[in-house]
Image 1 (cartoon, rainbow, N blue to C red):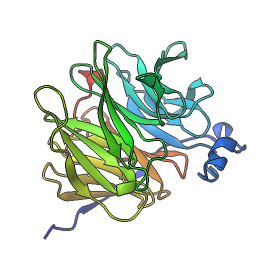
Image 2 (image 1 turned 135 degrees about the horizontal axis):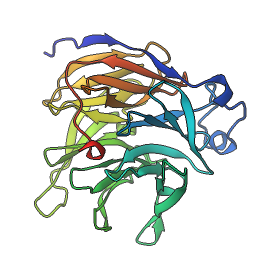
Image 3 (image 1 turned 45 degrees about the vertical axis):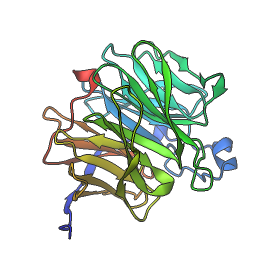
Length: 302
């Protein structure tokens, strides 16, 4: 039997000011059955740059925010898209997984957003969701679209550092957040309420794809992060929780939201990388909590 996970409570790190909360309705989201955005935004995709600025997206209204070390929200970019996930390259470029447009790049100085990957074998994506870099600069990303248990055709891709796009899997019911550890890719599979594992063979292909974690309740896992011990950090929307599992998959901590239950994504930050930063999409806020184990150093900071 597992011991009950330790409970860790959060506090608000920064909150979207009223001046940046949209009063309008996104008609495309409404038509897709995604409902209103009472917070005037839908925060996702948190990531820190080298200067200590925290970036996050507003999926509902096509904005990318920069939250300064003084906890002030700034609009780094605003465009006709649906940004969902962010990853920062070692050279400072910000890569964006945009559900509507594909993989984009953002110049943080000019605010210019440019397309990078828009199709695979001349066919558009279903709707990309999240992305990460490995230590060699290869980019991994999920193509979620509206796949589910009735249409398990979500995909995972690798875009190599020398510009080759490879499809790693095409059989997932809603692939979402992802992390890489010891040559195994872990993917949050939202509609299956699970985290799957993708071990790599020496030639880079996926072998023995399997189930790593089976969750219950909520919407299913969303964004993820990784700590230095190989532990998975999993945001679980509608449970109001971020779960931390050790390298064996045993639950160790439940990080409880102090605001809404709609926590969507997570990253590590702070000088010792022992602070979690969590996007609370229901409240339009960034939450934070201290944990025991530092987050794994990202490609952008290595």
